[in-house]
Image 1 (cartoon, helix red, strand yellow):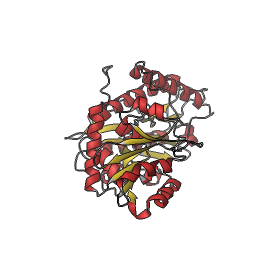
Image 2 (spheres, rainbow, N blue to C red):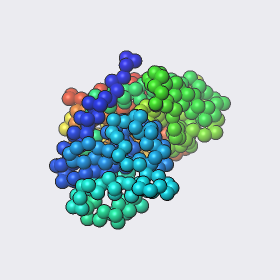
Image 3 (cartoon, one colour):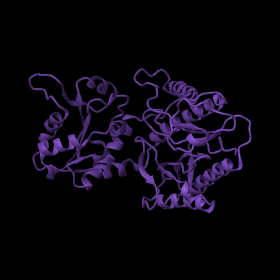
Image 4 (spheres, helix red, strand yellow):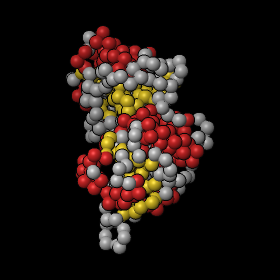
Length: 394
């Protein structure tokens, strides 16, 4: 990949804003109050802000958006974003300055008038904050804007696709580091360390000295080895010593670059001992399930139909009770991103959507296996953003 990032520009952010404002007007809202950091990044490019204190972005149906920020984070937002901080709030007495996020949001919303209809992203707003807003502004004025925002973010622009490509590239480096260190007598956490170091180093390469963005990763690392732990879909890399002949199931489904997610999962064989027939069966059924789901991807197909293709492959192999989760989910700024690829989901695939396909097969006492990849829906099918051929040699 080229070193230069097709990074979101002011024009990209303004185009996103105009799409959102069109949806606001069509939905009958006058203004949105969004507390999700994913939406802050989507609209304003804000990245790496501590989530200890609430930050809101206020988006009118017409006009310019503004941030409402705790004073501690306001300098970071002003440095990173084209959207101004219109109102700070603090945690001590200072004349004329709000002492809570809700008080500050209410102050910014006052000019819209007492009859303005306000949309709030319920999925990202705490119950306490939502109740406080209702008490301050009137419950009848506030409604859920989560479906509206999801629809606007569903089809990705080129800047988003380019950033997700970087996340995919980082996941490949994680996988190669995992394969290099996974061996009998090595603890799972040692694999995690190698994988995270590889991700950090590659993210730093893509940031290319940027002083405002950190390549460091946060959170847990999903990884499990052996018959018992690999059959748990979300075991985390811990202290178990791997053994020759184990399957090590790894998942790189975090957000390694600019807060954008990725889906890349693979089983890894530990050592040189041949895998048993039962283990190979599980791994191969998982691979077949993913391939069946991928074969259904094209515009006009529903996510429920994609899921059903994976289910039929698992059932045909005689392992209908081996399911633990949906077939996949959207990929983007949220983790997980909408839509969910699950039974009966009516979401219709469109060109420009990015989705992760990751059906898993888990048999207690034998092993678990999951092949996961990130793909871009195209006019004729899909383009893999993670390398489908990598790690499939079972």
